[in-house]
View 1: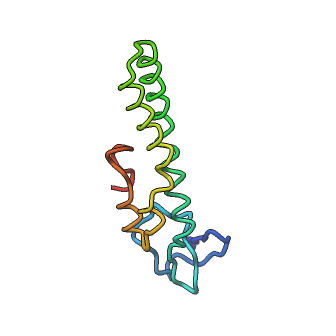
View 2: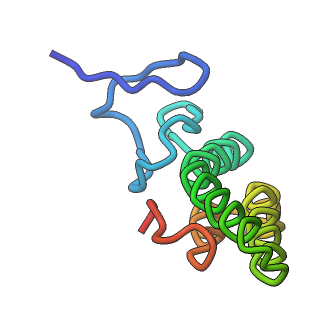
View 3: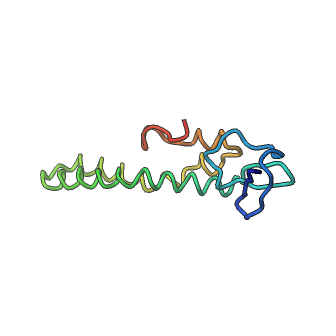
Length: 122
């Protein structure tokens, strides 16, 4: 029984005849050309941005708590720091390192561990 690989456009080939990328994190961005599968960087970047959005959601929720505590304490410095962090989290999917990434390795390196924590692509 053959195993088939299906690309993002619904094309399929027998897996035993395919040249497949070793990194499977961006399977949703695979594009088939003959028997060679490569990553569509535009689609890979969208997958990467979606992962950032997924990871940042609880971070934004936690930062809302920090801001509310600073608001209650009338701590202007803590409020400003919280606003800065929330802005950075909101802007994370638009990072220039993502836009300029020319291959999967560069895209994976664009993960901001200082802001988002450990990379899911490590």
